[in-house]
Image 1 (cartoon, one colour):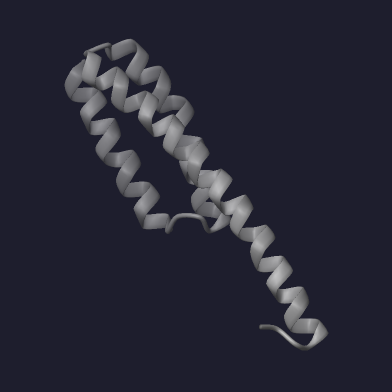
Image 2 (cartoon, rainbow, N blue to C red; image 1 turned 90 degrees about the vertical axis):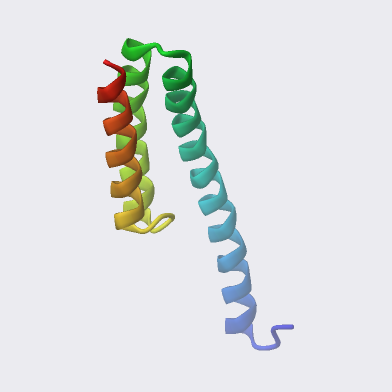
Length: 87
C-alpha cells in the first residue's frame, strides 16, 4: 500500500486513467463490432459507413495510448480489406 503522499496521488491518477482507458477501449470495441456485424450480414454500404466511423475512433484511441499505433493500423487495414472484398 502507498504510504507517501506522492505515491497515494499516483494510485489515484492510475485508477482514474484506467477507468478512462477502459471506457475508450469499450467504445472502440463497440464501433468495431458494428463493422463486423455489417460484414457478417453482407451489407456492403452499412459496413462501409460503419468503417468510416470506426477508423477515426480507433486511431484516436491509438493516439491516446489505449492501443499501439501499429495495432490500430493493422485492424483498420484488415477491416477495410474485408469491406472492399464485400463490395
